[in-house]
Image 1 (cartoon, rainbow, N blue to C red):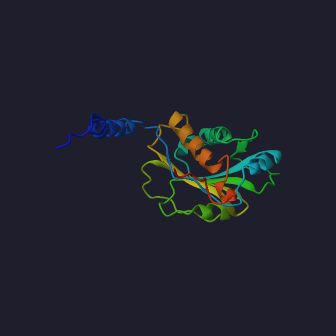
Image 2 (tube, rainbow, N blue to C red):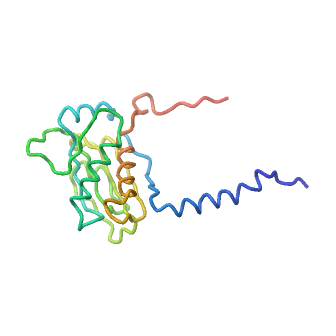
Image 3 (cartoon, helix red, strand yellow):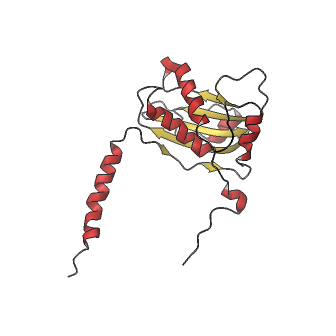
Length: 193
């Protein structure tokens, strides 16, 4: 009878150890792959920058007693989450804001919450017992969803916890991809050997 190779014999214990190590990471962000419409292009961030920045419409909060600090972290983390020009984000909408571009996000969305509803301005259902800190976010052009994602993390200690900053930054990376493969015929091409 053929003996399993040493590499194959070690694979199970190594995989188990890796999963155990990852489960200990309380700041591990899990994101659904972002959904990107065919109309998204990274150049839209330049248009938003030329208009003076981008409004972030935040619904709900994981830290009700620290909303101002939560907003500051959201603004800063999104500003570091994209490729392209310097783009300020702000959670207080200026009176003269006219740009159609905005980020809409809701904390603790219900599992069936739909990102299209965020861009249309509809009420998005929230979870009764959220457990982890979850955010559903969309990059919108008026009422059109350009990109969206859902991300979550084990409940961070507060808005200044690096895990919360990481949650928002990873969400932004999904919202503002550096390319749109749908505009180039559907996706990356892989060669077969």
